[in-house]
Amino acid sequence: MGKFSTYRYLELKDDTSTSHINVRTRSIKQPRRLKKIFIFLLILALCVTYFLGMFAGQAQWFDGLAKSLGYESVYHHAVIIDAGSSGSRVLAYKFRVPFTVFGQPNLDLVDEYFEETKPGLSSYVNDPEKGADTIVQLVKKAEHLIPFDKRRVTPLIVRATAGLRLLPKEKALQLIDEVAKAITKLGYDVGTNSVEIMDGSDEGIFIWYTVNLLHNLIDGETMAALDLGGGSTQITYQLNDQDKKNFPTSDIYTVPAGGDNITLYTHRFSSKELAKLNMSNEKMQKRLQERFLWHTPFKCNQIEHEHDVTHR
Image: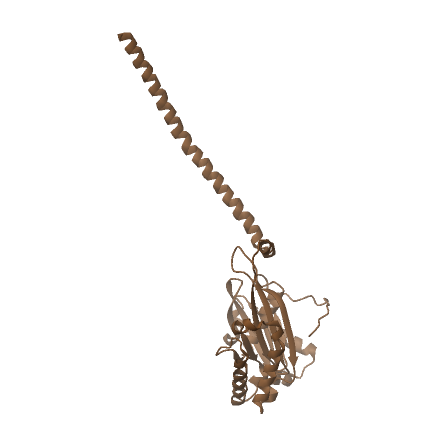
């Protein structure tokens, strides 16, 4: 009986030792297994992020996929009046907001409408009501693009340029006030700053934005822009930090571009200044180069490049 008990004790002891080893082995294997799972999930997350990042710049791919899954696009509209010195133009736009994964979505232009009337708003300096009516008629011509139920949330912006800047201040403000009163009756989103006389520097900056956005250069090496208007001419281009000291501070502006701030130089020539110069195109080009461009190299479209342009 004693031998049997001793044998049983040894057997139980061996079983306990084996069980202890098995538990220890499982406890060692479990963290290793969790570590492998963690590494796998980490690699999977990195791969997904990488591929999503590749497609993030391909908004059309994501947008097309979203539409196939039933995504409903959101549409926005805007009506802009350019009250220039030689004529007034209406530019109506229809945009859609595409589906996007990363960042803020860009607006896709779906449709647009353009119409022009002459003479310019400044020609009605002695008849502000008639001048305002020309603007109203332009807006009405674009109504086919703006659904009636969307007009109250559609911004209507009027910007007058050199034609009104050259008028006596009181006369110019009378025209602006009459236009503001007239367009508030059309049912659009019209605010206190919807009708204004644009500063010459704003004209230059906006044309610079237009040129570089159309060429997709905002984030890279930008181009200069020369706006030849009926009552003024603006020249605008980007400056680096070293060039700032060569220009008057009144012609230097800091503006947002590509997620950062950049410095632009813009200068306006009035029609009177240009008339006083009385130069040929060749002499004018030389004058501009000597005065503005001698120390600031930038890219331009190729001189020998030709293409047809249709002005509507």
